[in-house]
Image 1: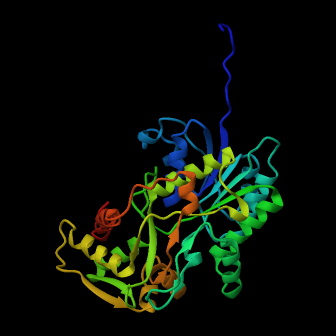
Image 2: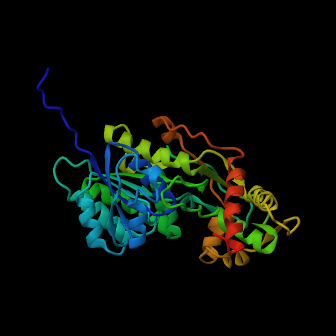
Length: 360
């Protein structure tokens, strides 16, 4: 009928931590392209604010809204609680290990007003389920339809580990605060992030950088330990899917709300072969053939980006194979796999090679 006033549906308010990081940056870019969300993100510098909000420097991302940027850090728990209390959805990509931050975010969501959706999406990692056996195969595959909370409890009682401790606390806090919690557990992530601020992934670049510097691609022990993997674009799509399924009430939450995200697997020796191939393919590489060599955990602990022996064991020599049954049942359709990991390493190698030569 003419004269009718059009109905305007308000956007859902999303608070995102880690918006300048590898995972969070990709999710931020995806949320900004949606007409359904009004996004606030936490940043640590004025320069990051400028980059994230300037259509001049990043025009391809500004087809929709721009994020509201708030200066702060995860240690600003009062600020986190306030921002969460003003939101429908909180997506935590800044840290899998920061318990005070998780407490503030979920507590704030619990205090949000009537009509708020109160959805908390937490980012963990499959190192919480990793088994180390000197670089050899060990353990078994984990399916996200299993009782993962009980597995995490048992393991964390035996050996406390931040990823496990916080993931368990997220479930508990959600119940206490009447917040629906969803924990996404990525394996090794690869691929160039479709983010406003480009970042490299976490596990592969240190190995590639070391190969450029030493002309050797390393693996721990026999190199037969295996990790699952996922492309950053597929992972980002899963976050979007979980959020939308949470809004519609389809996705399981809380105790049953732990989701794996994987689409392929490689042994660490296969990864080393990929590193070797990526470095040898570099334009201008004059270092000859890159050797393959087994190294100790202590050696691996000494490279840039690795925080001690435990980190090296988990990041480069452990086993963790995950099966994302619940994600697939929700309709997740990952498209990257197979040799996409090698292609990604080649692209990462180009970036790291330029850094090594002092180029921008």
